[in-house]
Length: 135
Image 1 (cartoon, helix red, strand yellow):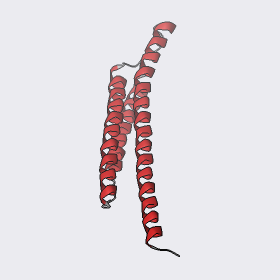
Image 2 (tube, rainbow, N blue to C red; image 1 turned 180 degrees about the vertical axis):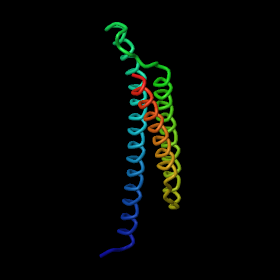
Image 3 (cartoon, rainbow, N blue to C red; image 1 turned 90 degrees about the horizontal axis):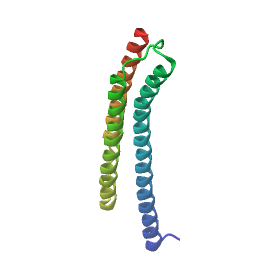
Image 4 (cartoon, rainbow, N blue to C red; image 1 turned 30 degrees about the vertical axis):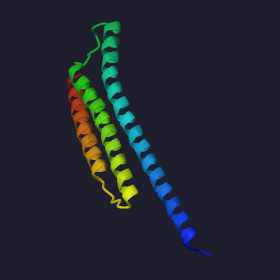
């Protein structure tokens, strides 16, 4: 039979689940930021690899200039860092709201990340099209 003790314990369990879900969300954002930063690192290092391969094989290989890919890679690493910072801020804000029992959903971080990745992907597409036409 449900009584006041069972209701109180059920509320405590729900609070614990909410906080654990908040932590899992933070960890997912951390994985996302690491993935974005790793991709940026690969973009920069792959350009260096192609340049070294060109030197190794001789000047017969057309090697695209490194400048643009370095900038895109550095921007990706910076975006990953910003995502990490925003994820932590969102985590703390959600934690505070859960403690006050005043949580309200917000998709601002998701919207910002979506537009940032879209802008970077458009820049990558333009860069790749430009390099494929010049080779």
